Length: 79
Image (cartoon, rainbow, N blue to C red; front, side, top):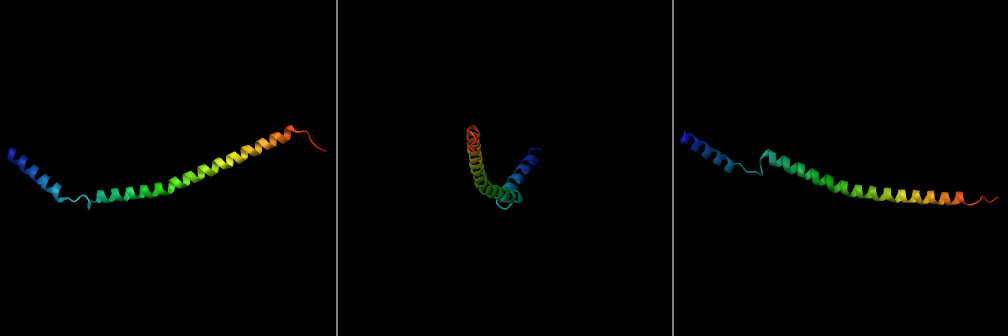
């Protein structure tokens, strides 16, 4: 029994050394998914910043317009 266990351990150790992690399909998938994730982040972050900044500027202009209209409504009508 011990001899069988030792043989199995030796075989497993030999197979683990023989496998190059850079060429296995799972490593390639990991590199591909990581690359796509980084690419998406490089595109998403600047777009998100741009949309956030433009939305805030639009909101500020809208609030300023509302304030001006309220001020105009508060003034008497000039005929």
